Length: 276
Image (tube, rainbow, N blue to C red; front, side):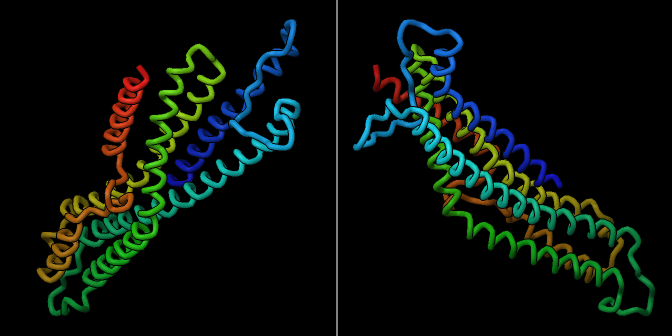
């Protein structure tokens, strides 16, 4: 449920940014109707396109509809892919959370009746199932991390480039409100996209580390020694955090998002100095 709410928030926010981006080129045509002047205001398309066989200015609205559809398809494709990843990552996080909850429940009233072999003890079976679930959660994480490293690397790189370039465009085009507003919408969407790429990774990291705390805060000391050994092995594995990475170079978490944002600001300063 938490993953679905996050994905829904992500969808609504990106669609809002897209709507703002798509409405900017219509400012001049709307003003020509609402507040006409002697002549026609300069019109800017969504993207700079050049058609060989006809003049784009003569077919402004036809080209706008084409670019509108293309932009919508790209954005909704990105949203769909990221939505799926968010749900999958939250599923992996849920496995660690459920495992920790089961460990605490299993050790509340351990069945330590004398004369019963530990291997036949009900508490031992529950802890054994928790260890199996922990192993399956780690396997699921390994598959998820291996399949997403390449896409995360491309997305993080493109977002950093987009934030830096569009921020410079905002400053350069302050005398042209339409261009500055369009660049601001794209820059804000890129920042938000990078943040929402990092947030699910942070959620997974938190749930993975919480498992060790759940084991430690349980009544493990009241269980047989053989059960304590199983819990100890699980705790040792919890010290290796399950962190999603972008190409094995960049860990997807909130701390690195802040570092990346500062790096983008440094790139902006450098690009502005080159302009001067």
